[in-house]
Image (tube, rainbow, N blue to C red; front, top):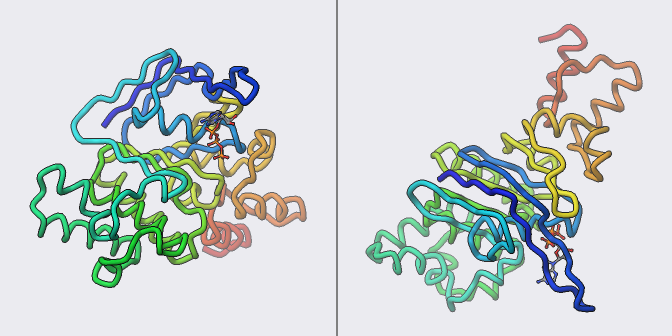
Length: 269
Ligand SMILES: Nc1ncnc2c1ncn2[C@@H]1O[C@H](COP(=O)(O)OP(=O)(O)OP(=O)(O)O)[C@@H](O)[C@H]1O
């Protein structure tokens, strides 16, 4: 699905009745791939995802989804998403109301949960709210993945996940994009975005202040810091190594790429 935003503005009412501007003239065109959305706390990421999903109307500007399929939004707090009494019902509900026969819905839910490293057989009868925080997040992601949305919006999907679950989550995000979905992932985790994002959009006080190729932006540690963001570990390490006189060619963004760059700098393939 293609998504175009044109001059989108949105304000909330603050506690003293004042207007708090959450989105300020945001224009973006998204079509395929994984777009990482970064920004300090309160910069407007969640609000932007909700506007993109059509869950919150903009005050002004236009939000135009085009193309077949549907929108899937994974909330920052999984419990905001749960409304069924069991994991089986939670993960199959969306499919069943769309007319998918129960056995197929169960199979698709089981597959989505397996992608997230969980077993439907083990969790089927459990209340989603009785699960651990990491399990809840994975069930919330699986429920949305099972619908195979063509616009997939994820708010901090790796927060609180252990390393294995985090890897599974990033693989699932990448494969959704590889299957043709347009994916937007809000995250404070530059390392996670370094692994999956094609494009990076940075919000500051509701405005887009950076928008470009994720690799280039994430590898530029001074630029990231200038925008109040923590660079990816490998980009930080590459900077420190260069300052110490070690040759680190290219723009390594992951541990493996950094190791490869150091070896290449020493003349070894
Ligand atoms: N329901 C609301 N009522 C009033 N103000 C709100 C509401 N939701 C968000 N805001 C304000 O809008 C601004 C943007 O909030 P938003 O949650 O979109 O930021 P964020 O970048 O997602 O933050 P975080 O990284 O902490 O999740 C903030 O100033 C926030 O206080």
